[in-house]
Each structure stands twice: as structure tokens, then as C-alpha cells.
Image (cartoon, rainbow, N blue to C red; front, side, top):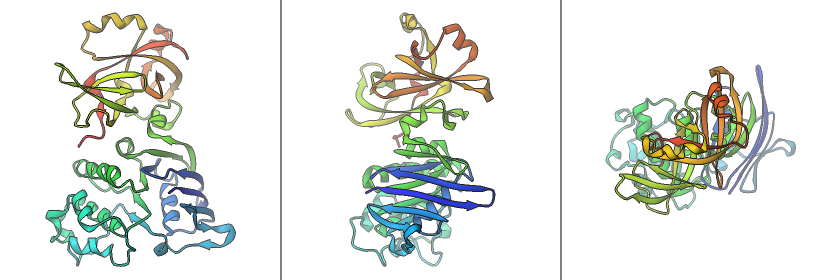
Amino acid sequence: MSLSVTLRQDWPGIRIAIGFEAPSHGITALFGRSGSGKTTVLNAVAGLLRPNSCRIALDGVVLADSAHGIFVRPEHRRIGVVFQDSRLFPHLNVAGNLRYGLRRAPAGTIGFDDVVELLGLATLLKRRPHTLSGGERQRVAIGRALLAQPRLLLMDEPLASLDQERRAEILPYLTRLNHSLRLPTLYVTHALEELGRLADHVVLLREGHVVAEGGIDALAARADLPLALREDAAAVVIAEVIGPAPGRFLTRARAGGAELLIRPVSTPPGGLVRLRIPAREVILARPEAAGLAALTSVQNLLAGTVRALVEDVGRQAVLAEIDLGAGAVLLARLTRDAVARLGLASGSAVLAMVKSVAIEPLDEG
């Protein structure tokens, strides 16, 4: 199943003109600042907005086509929507809210018991919404949307109204859903943490237009994109777990052409894990520095090549893309002085040095 979106919508002060193709599985994230067009896209796909012009197709079925006068009503699109606020029915308990999603749903493969288990709702079924925490309410709202047997799930910043503790509570459930159901999901966010942990495909928006789209590992390490200009900029690397490093209390993992030592993870050998590596934690050195490895606390000395250097004017710094081979790329933030002293240029051979504790496994929990 794939989602194709092309739309134009004029709002006061801004024109939204967006087009993209979402993959057939996993989570496609719409990422950008407020006003970039994220919610406009989501509402158009859900059928809650008739854009000035559009063509939206899901799995080859046209849901809206302004040129041909086609507009499928929201209730006939089989699309589940989860909003920022849970919008639960206060007079129903959790079980009643969940079963509401089943009332008009066609036969499907997502069962009530499966949703209760996946979202950890067993102990909440008899409680009313007003007795739940914000994270618990959102889990119920997600469960209700899933039980409507949607072909596509839309999530409009579902964690935006939660504090950091509640976000940390619900993120593992969203990761588990993605791994277990593989339900195509369009996820709106402006939080980099959610993007790195959840997104398989990213559509990066700015001022109503698509800046770039692609896999999270490809876009996060692009020094020329807005993601890299944030203080918390980081590469997201997809690595294969090799297994424990004997006697070192660390795990070996392979990312592209490099082998990494990371904190212990529960992912079994052969499994994939996402690793977030902050740009500010990557130190670059000349290749001859490899002989000094035993004299430092840094466990990862990775041979790479400078792919690009981009000025970070706001921080008086330079962003370097470091190619580790076979598609794995790191991002490093350096001073201009460091670039000059090391004689760095596109194509330069370097060692990228990263402490194991600075590498954050995103799939754990």
C-alpha cells in the first residue's frame, strides 16, 4: 500500500504546495516547524479539508482529485486519526472507548485483545478517561483508531501535549506498534526525538514546501538540511547487532562499513537497531591518530571520508558529513579552526572518534 499526495492550499500569508509519495509500510513523518504545512496535509488526507487543488490516492484508489471532482467522504476512507488531544468519550470506560472503534469497522486482522496487549491497556479497561494520565489517554485513543481496521493511520503530534515523562512512557508503545503491525502511518511532529526513534521515511517541510524526503538515516546526516542546524543535530544510523564484546560489557554492531561498540542492547544478534549519534559528540582526527587509541577512553575510532563541509553560520561552526562506507554517514560539528588545522576538504580521509556512551540506541525500551 502506498500514499500519493499532491496538494495546494492558500492560507493568509502562505501558500502550501506539497507533493510526496509515502512508502507502503512503516512510519512516514511530516517534519517541520509550526506553519510549514504538516497539519494541512494530514487533514487533506483524512478528508477533513478540501484543498484548493489536490490529488490524493491510497493504494491506487483515488480519495480526492479536484480536477475530476472526486472527494471521498472521511467516513468512507478507512483512515484512522489520532489527534493531539485524545478526544475520548467521557461517559464510556476504556473498554467502551476501544470497542467504539469496532462498531462500524469492516472485518480486519487487528483484534481487541491484540490491541490491549500491544498498548498495555489490560489494567485500564474499567477506568473512565478522567482518571487516566495523558499518556494513558493517548494509548487508548491509538487503540480505538486501530480497532476501526484502518488502511492508513494518521497521527497529528500525538505527544505534543504531554510532558517529557509521559512522552518517554508512550514512545516505546509506538515503536512496538510499528514493529508489530507494520500499518502504514503518517506521523506529524516537530520533535527530533520522535523523528529519530519512529520515522522510517521523512518528508521535511519548510514554509509550505517539501525541502527533502527520504530515509531517516539519509536525511539526518545531511549537513545542508535544517535538521543539521539544530543544537541537537545527530546522525541516525541503522546498525546490525553482531553480539556482545567479550569481557568489555559492550555490544558490537555493524553500520555500513564500520564496526561500533555500543552500550548493551536487548536486540539479538542479526537484528537491527537505530543508533543516534549527536554531531557534537563526534571528534575528527587525521588517520595517523589511530595509534593513540589505546591511550584514550574513546572506544570507537572509525575510518571515514569527508563527504561534504557546510558552514553553520549561526554557531560560527562547520558541519562535516563523514562517509563510513556502505551507506553509513556521521555528522560532526567542528570549529573553523579545527577544519583549518586538520586541512579538511571534501574527500579527506579522517578518523571519527565517538565514545560508546554517546551513542544512543533508539529501539530499546
